[in-house]
Structures are given as structure tokens and as C-alpha cells.
Amino acid sequence: MTTSDHYRTLAAPATSDLRERASKFLGFAFPLTNQTEYQQFLEETKSLHPKATHHCYAYRFGPGDDQYRANDDGEPSGSAGKPILGQIDSFGLSNVLIIVVRYYGGTKLGVPGLIQAYRESAKLAIESAEVVDAYYMVRLEVIAEYPTIPDVMYVGKQYDWVMIDQSYTTTHQTIIIDIRESVYLSFWNDLQIRAGGMYPDDLKEGKTSLTVQISRLTDHD
Image (cartoon, rainbow, N blue to C red; front, side, top):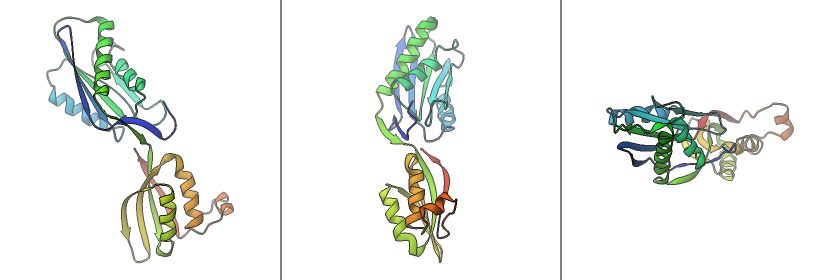
């Protein structure tokens, strides 16, 4: 998996349908906007298929290699969740959940057969989806005095920020933005210098502007 702020994910949910020796495997692929969202999709899928024998799943989220989960839901260990996760990784995806629902058809598939079926179901679900490029973002709050706003806007445009919200007081304007994770520090420095009136040596000494305040709210993917 990449450790940059660029990743590939799904544009929208997608499904697949696979039959293997009388068992039915239904694949459901979802893009994730946060790591805990998988629980909502899992519960919704279970409620739609309450009589299914198994609801196996895997997801990968965020940069790096450590934010993932694979669950066999009663199938033999390693026969369902890991093959599903393997397909997410094979396609180079992140911020993705895949659930494979199995309706048992009366014929045992054995561990190799299960691995193949869950792998194929996940693959078909991904192939039926649109894969898109995306970037890990950070959400910031910028509070600036009105005379500095033109410079704030200039710097923001240079970094292709995405404006989410704005509010106003008699002396300050507050702007909520999303910006790419990889440029966050450069953006912070440039905004402090151009709009906040600081010098590079000031920043090295840990000083910050009183006219422009920048707060990191949360990671936003």
C-alpha cells in the first residue's frame, strides 16, 4: 500500500452474484468515508440478508498498511476474510469495504473451494464498480482578521483548497477547508508568512501569527 496521500477507491457501491456448487455468493463493495462506517454497511447488509449462512467481509482504510480488518464469520479460518482483503490489495484500493454474503447450498466446498469462491466474488464486485483516484485530506479551520483575507484566499488557491464553510464576526472571518495531507505543512507555513506577517525565522522559533490562526480539525478522506 502507498504511504503518500494518493489512493484509489470506488466511486459508488457495487454488487456481484456468484453461484458455486449450489451455494450463492453475493458481493457488496462500498467506498468508506471513515473507518467505523463499515459497521453501518455490515448491519444494513445483514438486515437485507438475515437468512444467509455467512456475512464475511474485509476492509482497508487510510494510508499505510495497518488499518484493515478481515472476518470469516464462521467459515474456516482464513478461507473468507483474507481472500476478500487480498482482492482489495490486488486492485490497489483503500477506503473500501467488501462484504460477501453466502447462502449455503448443501454441498461443502472445502477450504480451497471457499477461498476461490470468496476471492472471485470480491473480484467481481470490484470489477463491477468504477475505480477512481482520490487523496487523503485534512480539514482545517482558518480564522483571520479581515485585512488579511485577500492573502489567505491567494494562498488557499495556490494549494487547491476546498472551501467547506464560512462564518463571520465583526473582526474575523472563519473558513473551514479541506486540503491535501501532503501539502498541509507547506500550506501552514506559507499562510503564516504571507497572510500572518511572520518570518521564516519566527516559525523556526515556534512563534505563530496573531492575525491568522490555523487549527487542524480532523483527517477527512
